[in-house]
View 1 (tube, protein in one colour):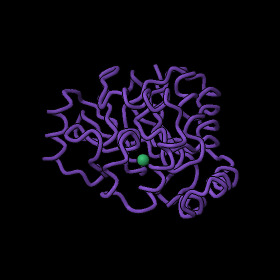
View 2 (cartoon, protein in one colour):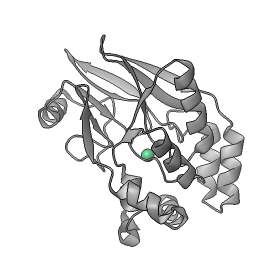
View 3 (cartoon, helix red, strand yellow):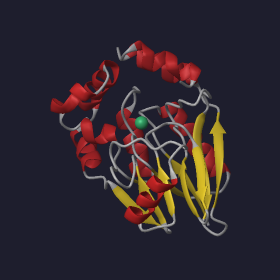
Length: 226
Ligand code: ZN
């Protein structure tokens, strides 16, 4: 069976819709999300509604967590804090409550899912330079041989013998220098990961961010994928 893994949609409806089209075109029906459905972009409710409509299981990202209670924004950079506050006020009560109830971690088909890491599911950043000692700790915590993470917006696959840690990159706010939406397909039989990139209407998403009065950098960085 093939599962599409998406992460860090960040209220980018244009990127999310195009990725869903690409997944459908491949005949894949199972989709799992690694968190940060909202934050930064101009369509938080539309993106949450799509997650619900498609019955996509998702873990909770840092944006879902910190947009609930705006009393903890001082550790964020100013534009992230502004976007979190904007998102908090834009979200409907139902959608805010839906995001509050998302699990921090999940295990499906032998894969452990967290937004950050098995040690700190909400906030830790894990990159492809993860050491073998750290990986060992993560696999101990996860109790699976496969770990899928989001949060960094940078796709990678790292193998440790039979074990593997990977990140599908970001649907709505890529930061690896490639502005196309990123996601991946996991094959449960072969235990392989295939990274995908999808073109979408960046200008439309970027213009909406400007019109919403969100920080300009959140709009301009979509063109650069940084
Ligand atoms: Zn994110």
